[in-house]
Image (tube, rainbow, N blue to C red; front, side, top):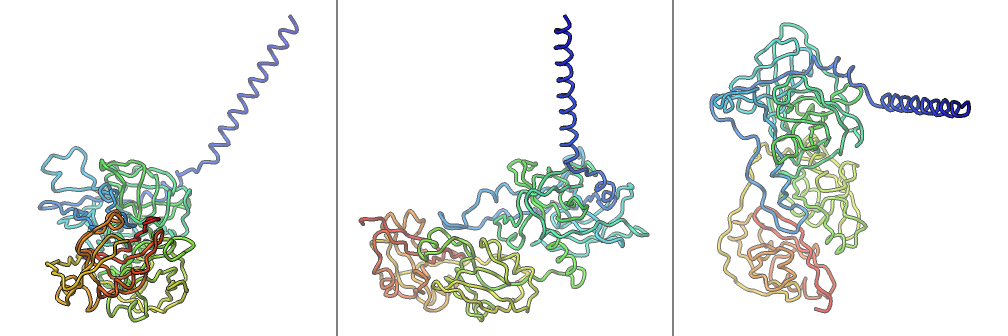
Length: 491
C-alpha cells in the first residue's frame, strides 16, 4: 500500500511539474510576442475616418484597359492585375442610392496644424470630404493636392487648435518578417486594429501607372475602408500608407500592399510646395533580363534591366545609353530586376546627374545621365498601324519567319526613326511561332545589332547554328520586348 501511495504521489508530482512547465512555456511564448497596446493608445488619436460624397457616379479608381504584351515574355499580361483592387469603403448599411454617392476610407494626421495624408482614390472627384476624429468631432476637409501616380492625397482641416500627429519612420529599413500594425476603418468600423508581418519589400504590381512605386507587401488584414490608413512599425512610427489588396472578391485574402512612407512624404512635400509632383525620367523603355538573354549573352544571372528602347533627345540618349544595354545599377544601387529602376528614377530630382552602370557587349561601363522631368500626362500613346506592302522580302528558315522592309511613312506611323526596323511578313516555322511572334511585329535588333534593312537582317541571321539562341528586339504597338529564339538541335 505504501509503495502504491508513493507511486501515486510521484506521478502527481511529475504531472504537476509538467503542468508548471507548460504554463512557463506559454508565458515565455507570450512574452516573446509584441504588445501593441502602447502603439495603439499613442497613435489612434492621429488616425481619422474619411467620408467622401459625390454628386454623380463615382469615378473608377483603376483603369480597366490593360497593356497588350507579347506572350512568353517577362512582362506578361499578368492575371494578378485583374485581381488588384483599390478598396473603397462603404457606409454601414447604406441605401442603394447612397452607395452610388458615398465612399469611406482612412487617413492620418501628419502635422499638428491639420494636414492629413490619405489615398488619392479615396477622395478622387469628391464634392465634399468629411473627416471624423477619435473624439467624434467631424470636420470638413479641403483637398490641398493629389498625385494619382503615387495614389496620394493631402487634405487640410481646421480644428481650431493643435491636433495629435503621427511619428514618421523609415520604410527603407523594413525587412521581411518584421511586425507591423494597421489602424483604420474597414467596412466603417472605426479604429480597427490589425497586425501581421512584412511579407516582402520592393514589390512591383506590374501596372503601368504604378511602376514608380515599390510596394510593401504584408499579411496584415486590410479591407475596404482601410485604404489611406497608416501602417506602423513596432516603434509606433508610420512606415507605409495602406493602399491595395490582392483579391478576386474585393476583400482581404492574406496579401496587402502599402505605399512606402518615404515615397508618400516626398509627394506630400512637393504638393505642399508647388502643387504637383515631379518625377525623374531617364528616357528608356525597359524589360527584364530574360533567361534567353542570359543564355545568349553568357551572363552569370538575370539581374538588371534590359534597355529595349531609348527616347530621342532624352537624358539616356545624350549620355550614350543604347537599346540592348543592360542597366546594372542606378546611382550606386544595384538592380535585381527591371522593376527596381522606375521607383529610383522617379524619386530623383529632375536636372540631377546620376551615374548609371551598364553592360554592353560583355563589358561594364558607367555613364553619367542627367535625369529629366517625367511628363505629368499619363495617357498612353497608341501607335496606329497601316498596311505595309513589301518592297523587298527575305527570311530565315532556321528562325521560322520572313521579314519585309519598311518605308519611312510606315515607320513614322509606327513611331520609329528613319532606317529603323524590318517588319515580319509571315511566321513560317515553329521556332518563331512558339516564341509568340506575329506578322506585323517589327524587328529592331538581332543580338544587339541594329537592323534597318532586309539585307542587314539576312547578314545578322546567316550564321545561326542548331542549338544557338538568337535574341531579337521586337516592337509591337507601343511596346518593345526582347525575344529569344532557340534553334533546335539537328535542324
